[in-house]
Length: 189
View 1 (cartoon, rainbow, N blue to C red):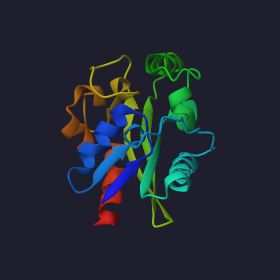
View 2 (view 1 turned 90 degrees about the horizontal axis):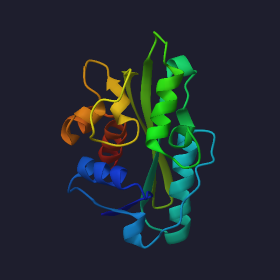
View 3 (view 1 turned 120 degrees about the vertical axis):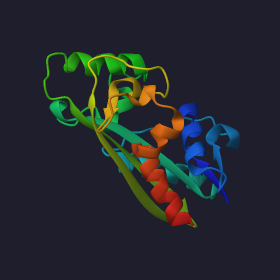
View 4 (view 1 turned 180 degrees about the horizontal axis):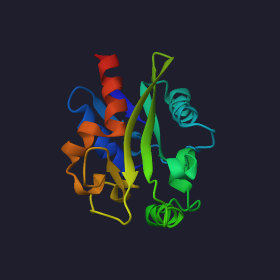
């Protein structure tokens, strides 16, 4: 089965292809020849994921899925949350986003957080949503150079290394996106 992943984010696409493996052929929007950005203006992760999947379904009528992920920091009242990619501005600069989180937590003792992913699937016109969560805490400084987004500052519970210090297989085995995609794959089987 061929599935379109409604993303232009090369890091996400690579990660999801690794998670799904050879069970399904996954292509991104660029491979479909679609280069338009799909807005993320919904108030929830689930809403953004559904909006993006519906956009592709309505355009092409093919099986598709999308995700939206948020870093939710307890001491920041759940921020950056649904605006994680744009936390430091519309430029979607990961370094600036991490700087803003680290600055906001500069003197915080409580650094607990979670990554949460919502994956929306549209298959034969029917909509399904899967969620994945991983708890952890925010490091005091960047650690590692793998991954993307907030990976260098997020340390999952039970580990002393950030996602950016882990190889893809280790990160994917426990990550929020990995958990949501595993639910998607279980549903499709």
